[in-house]
Length: 152
Image (cartoon, rainbow, N blue to C red):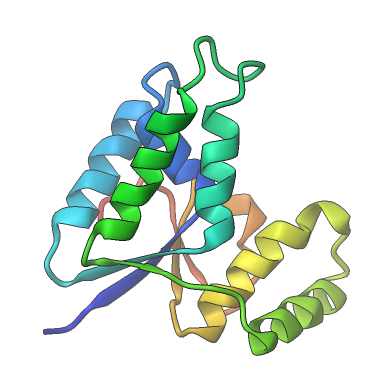
């Protein structure tokens, strides 16, 4: 069976799980359809799941925020899925990220996105699902899918 590999950005998880956000329904439907496909592997990094929990439990961003036990349960459900891989940074991916920062003359606010792109590219995951496509368009070899506008 051919596995189509998609890397997920944090904002996709946030929008999919926060009904108060305007993007919620479109992103939720997209992610649900993608996750149900037998031929699809979804990749997340520890930092994507960590940032998801950090953001959705923040009372300054959401009223009400998600309770910590619920947020960690959502993150665990991703880890428990057979078609979700939690992929970590390697030395090679970190080196690639630093090279991308230098090559594109990126500033400090682009560090996290660049590392995410480098991790996925290093692992051969050439499709990134994100609601911030402009943050990743400069990275050659990375196809961007915006769940608000595209179909899985």
